[in-house]
Image (cartoon, rainbow, N blue to C red; front, side):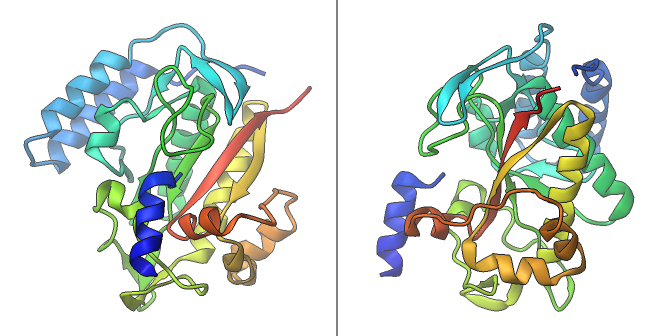
Length: 266
């Protein structure tokens, strides 16, 4: 049964303000990469970012997350001071583009997390194609307003990153309903940190006239999520967490949480 699930997942898994200073992001990106990365792909990643970070016109999200496109999409840096994009091949395949506003929301939130959790590292997963549209195997992610975030994990109440460098295979990891990794139940989802991340994303989104439209996360996780200190705040926040998912989509969202943003009518 487990092998069947993995096979199925492999086919179907999932008021404007001035934009952030791209030249500063470039500098920080390159300095961080030079310090932290010592593999053959680092220069290729830097060059790819440089080639795609010069889009000057404002982004335009057209249509919906499940039937839309993106104009003037902006690429996120592969590395930041406290985060890394999860997969080299995905990045070089132009699957790390988003709208200018969502890019700022995501990066500003990582800045806030760096202040509150200075020794914690995070992994950003897939966003949208350069021009939006269908991005196999996701059903959404089409107009630059969808983002996947890898779930932070702990072992013995300490951060654990042992599963975080698997690249696209991370989408096929399996956790039980308590958020424990099936092959090693000492590795657990950090529900409190997930709740904090979601709260900060919504707070930063409001500064740009946006908000979280919905959060997709494994349905069985919600009780554990809402039991945590930050989860109790999240439960009362009004942020919508989906209430029902198909078995396949529910299974897929045991290793990452999905966010759709929306512009708030003024």
